[in-house]
Length: 153
Image 1 (cartoon, one colour):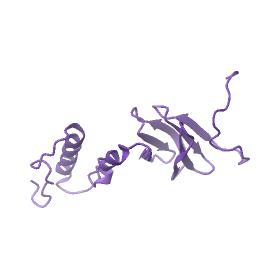
Image 2 (cartoon, one colour; image 1 turned 30 degrees about the horizontal axis):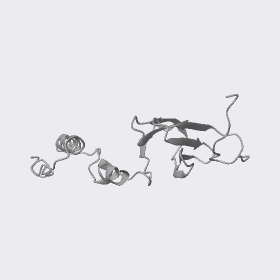
Image 3 (cartoon, one colour; image 1 turned 30 degrees about the vertical axis):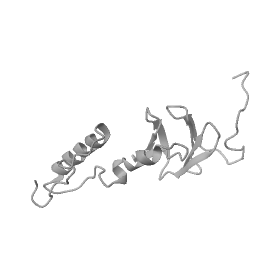
Image 4 (cartoon, helix red, strand yellow; image 1 turned 135 degrees about the vertical axis):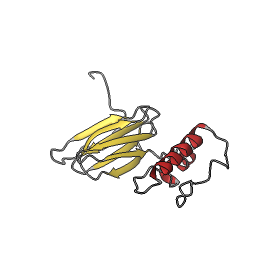
């Protein structure tokens, strides 16, 4: 940019050595995602006012960052093969509390890898529950019951 100007400085200039930096906007351009390999942190800044929303320490070096199309979550790919999906919990968004409550990781219904004869039924139940929660706002008491893992029904 030849004719651009600085609107807001999110991170002041400091001499920190030579490290890899990944900096990009999320899919909806609401947030700036900034990764610094020396600190091993992913920082998320709100674009409108420059406020730091999140400062997440990644477990290993980050190789890629991708935002979901709705802009609510960020997928992180790391050198060791770890894949982490984070949700941006912006306190200025009123609907975010309800959105977070519906996430499978918040109510214990995330897909887990387990051993035993009822694993397929557990996965089917969790996928059925997820479809019901995200597609239909009405509560269906008959399908809301967990399968009996002792009998396999």
